[in-house]
Image (tube, rainbow, N blue to C red; front, side, top):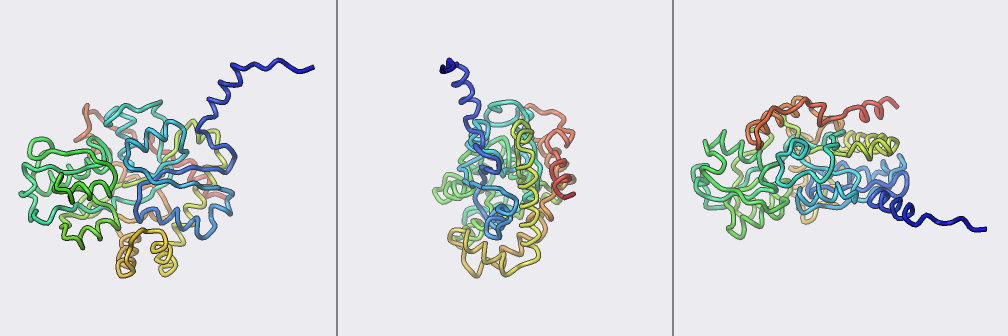
Length: 329
């Protein structure tokens, strides 16, 4: 005799699983485009994910708003995003409300602010930006506030008083906004900043140099997912650290992986790009979160975040426990 099926329970159970990784080891990652994805590409190319039993799916985002929205829908398990995004969304200072509990946290470092402030060809100084429009990913978070900080520190330009900002999305969209004369300046990631320079756009500042110790982007998970995928988290950390170590120790092969995965990257630029990746502000050594850099992020957010409030403590946005346990094996 067949048992009566509880249809309501079945539907609710299916909904609860929507967006969750179907099998142990399946990890879906959403990242911004650019050369700082080299650790993920390397882990794929060298088989580090395979060795750890991780089946990775990687997709690029059009911007942080899309990224956070998809993340909280459960369509992605881990995101590579500006560390500031975690803080902004967690503190209610983002462009859109956080579409769920403030349970996301950084567990692995990606880079230390490897971005360039680029300007249109007719912009010769910070003074020329006054009264103009700049392009950002999101108005209230990420590298948008890095741009505001540099313009204030280097040019004495106050956000919303001396210039306006428009939200357009990722690096490619910011460069397009400058090409279309919708904006005169923007923070541009590598290697797109190299392409922009060839087109005549002017580098005004290296974000890593201007900010000093800074936690740029990080790998981020939600606590609700991490709790149920502990082994996947540990495996992901181990594969990422192995990839980072390989990159720093194997220049020629790392450059080959860069060229294979970076759309339009010219061979003559690859070595320069590699030097930036392993230099100050580049990839996080051993994929570790830089706590001094985290403090810099929090300090800048206290200046530009709305409503203004005291940030922290750092452990509110960072959990190094997975990294520490993974490295003990």
